[in-house]
Image (cartoon, rainbow, N blue to C red; front, top):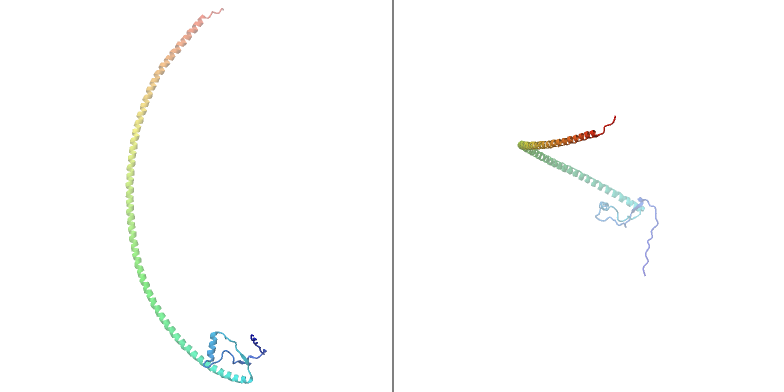
Length: 251
């Protein structure tokens, strides 16, 4: 049969001032041999918090006297220790400050020397680069001037060749035009002579045709006039005969 669970009975709470409380010997953290209060404080500061709550108990009158004596002794011990530690810390800080100041001065001097050396090197390099740039600029200007002179000479020669080519072409064109005009004039003269000859032949043919037609017209006219005269004479004769044959009218 299972055993019954033991119940924890808490004592009733009381209002006790903090100065009437002392640490209980049942605390987890206890002062051990060879471990100082400073070591414990450093350990608590390193951990950041307490891992276990503190157990306290009410302080009795006899305990109060003992506690006050121990507190005074601990206070004096802690004060002496703090003074010694403060003096040591101040001495350490002073020596560290002097060492840091000396180290800073040394580093500053070294940095200044390095910067001065680097500045001089940079200035020398800049002067070298500047002189090289000036030399290269002069070479470039000389090369550009030479190239410009060559281009001018080439342009002048090319312009002269173009002018000569244009002159030769103009002369050739003028000669060709004169030859063409001469050929056209000769052809026009030949065509004019042929046209005049053709016109003369046509005029001669027209005159001969007109002469022939005039002779034929004269013959026809004479024949027509003869016919008209014969017809007129015949009509006159008939009229005379009719007039003669009409009976005389008695008066």
